[in-house]
Amino acid sequence: MGKMSFLDKKEDKDLKNEIAELTDKMDQLTLVIWATDCAEHVLSHFEEEYPEDNRPRKAIEAGRAWVHGKISVSEARCAAFAAHAAARDADDGVARSVARAAGHAAATVHVAGHAVHAANYAATSISKERTWQHQHLLDLRKNS
Image 1 (cartoon, rainbow, N blue to C red):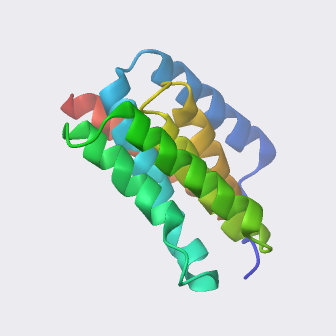
Image 2: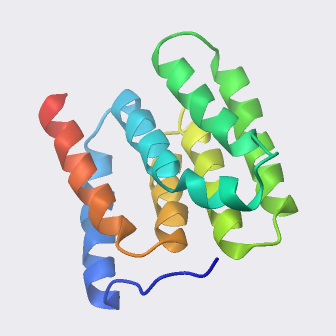
Image 3: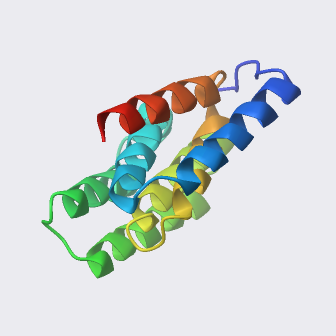
């Protein structure tokens, strides 16, 4: 599975900078929701290559479970580490980026700054992802 064409570098950089500014003003709960949504949005690219490996999916689920008060930060961190192990095990570059996105999404539970890393890894996996991320973040900001 190959990567699709990417946004113009300037357009991507502008969106990346605006996302960084927005995330600096958002609460951790919203950032976990956004980061898990970003990772899930590209998860199929991992699961198509590695259908038996559920570690990235479990990391996304862990982030969401924390949002609902169902697991501890420590449990979410364990899921994040497992997703990063899946990334190290992946031979496919796109799938590796998706697994890293999932790991950072779960790690956002521990440190809010991981949210942008989840988005960045997700954006490296498919074309135009940054545009979706930006719009989704704006939508979440309106609803919070």
